[in-house]
Picture 1 (cartoon, rainbow, N blue to C red):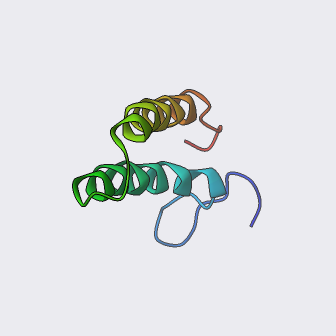
Picture 2 (spheres, rainbow, N blue to C red):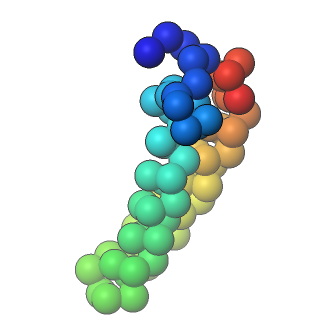
Length: 66
C-alpha cells in the first residue's frame, strides 16, 4: 500500500497510526502492574511521563495523509 493510500474501510494504512493505541495500552499496563505490585513507584514515576511525551510527539509528527 502506498503512502497516504486509504484502506477500503476509510482508515489510513500508515504504520505510525498504530503507535498511539500501543502507547495507551502501555500507559494502562504501567499503572495496572504498579497496582498489582510488579512495578516500583520510581519506575512508574519515570515511565508515565515518557509515554505521554511520546504520544504527544507522535501527534506532532503527523503524516500528510492525516
